[in-house]
Structures are given as structure tokens and as C-alpha cells.
Image 1: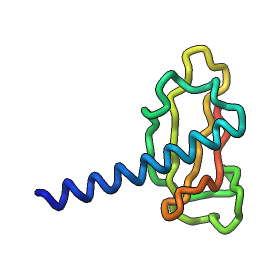
Image 2: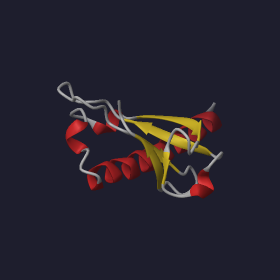
Image 3: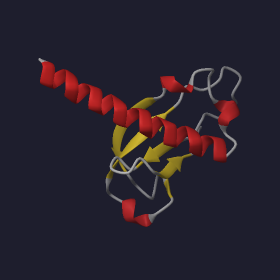
Image 4: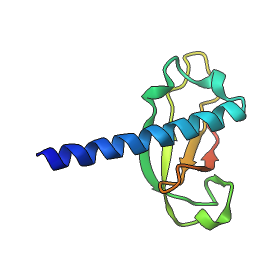
Length: 100
């Protein structure tokens, strides 16, 4: 049981770094006003990078498994917060999908 808890903790730590990288990117793009009050509530999932659906900052990620960080939108937001794609190995932002 102790080993599985440690593994779970490591995954959570990786997601904290991924969320922080995504939040920094949102700040850089001036999308921060679209977020709810607590950006730490972001959800992290895995997806395959697809240049036909996503804006990739580097083509090398095409077809690779990446993390997608989604934030809760503020109540008065007209356009949703973009989904942010993060390299699972380096925690660097490598793309996004504009909000709807």
C-alpha cells in the first residue's frame, strides 16, 4: 500500500509543475482574466498532440502523447480558457487549443 501511495504522490507533484507551466503561459498570453478564482483546481489529462486540432509551438510533438491542462472558466467569460498542452517529460508548454 505504501508504494502505491508514493507513486500517486509523484504523479501529483508532476501535475503541480505542469499546472504551473500552463498558468505561466496563460499569464504570458494575457488570458488570466478568463480563469476562475482558483487556478489550482486545474484538471490534467493525457491526449495525443494533433496539429490539425491544436496550435503546436513545435511540430516535433505531432502524434506524441502530451498532458492537457484545463482550467475552470470565470462565470462572466465569453470565450473559454484555452486548453494548454504540456510536455510530460519537461513540463514545458508545447501548444494550446483556443477556448470556445
